[in-house]
Amino acid sequence: FCGLRFSDVIRLTRKDLVIDKKGVFINNFKMQKTGRFVNLPLYTLFDGKPEKIIKKYLKLNDNELDLQNPIFPKVTDQS
Image (cartoon, rainbow, N blue to C red; front, side, top):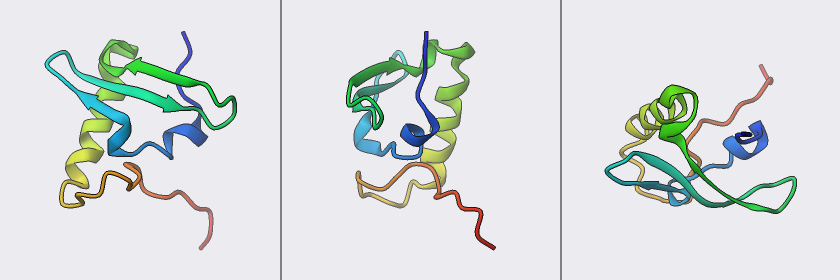
């Protein structure tokens, strides 16, 4: 089983997620490199660790209502 590339993870927004009673899903997300659409149940991967990380960042950004904002902060090597 394969997850997402880093380039895809940093593009994730709230509109790409579905949260239900089972857990968090990445729903119909278009991968940048291949252009394919994926659906990933995060609660089933790696003992639920990706789901915990997503939930942590969703709580940190809870005051931002825009569904288009990336979930994770922009990474840069600039000083």
